[in-house]
Amino acid sequence: MSDLISLKEAALILGVHPSTVRVWTNKGILPSFRTPGGHRRYRRTDVELWAEHARRGGLEPEAMMQSVVRSVRMRIAEGQLEGQGWYRKLDAEARLQYRQSAHSLFQSLLGFLSTNGINSSAEAHAIGFEYASRARRYGLSYVEAAQAFLFFRNTLIESLATAYRQANVPFEEMLHRMHAFTDEILISLLKTYQTLEKRPDKP
Image 1 (cartoon, rainbow, N blue to C red):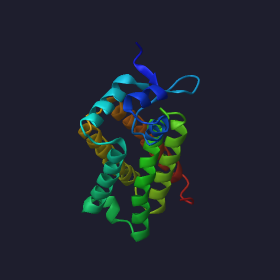
Image 2: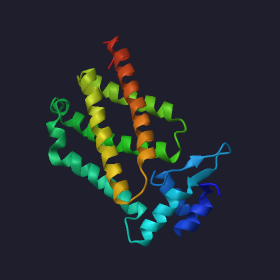
Image 3: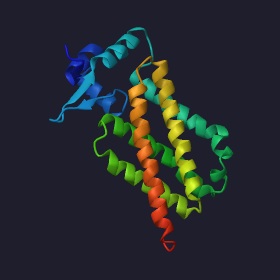
């Protein structure tokens, strides 16, 4: 018996409507894979773990993702940003833009997980360009630009990892994929900053 199952089979194991599984997948809650024909497939072991945890009254997928969002907001609101040297250099408008960028990065991570990395290189390049150009616009060095990105990257991944561990859901492979994706963003950031630095007349 193959460990890969269809969306419909996953829904039967979880006891929910297939559209619910699709929503959870789109939000990056349940990892999926794409066949050459574009169909979604799930690892039976991952789905059965979710089902078992739900039967024990554990954290539901929607609640888990809400927990991640709350955790990220709390970490940012608790003054951790104030301890960052790059953040203290910014004015109120720039600080707001950086905080909002955490939400955009979170959505990009979930999108990456839900599509199994389709078009991830283009997405990584776009995010890296955004972080580099913002840093240049507000007078941050390339090191500070990288520090800003890593602060939000690490906050998001740590929050996701905590939620998945609490739900007893395998996370190691997803963690590896998220690091690979965000490493690509960081490389794009540094390359873009280097290019912009050679054109000081442009932000």
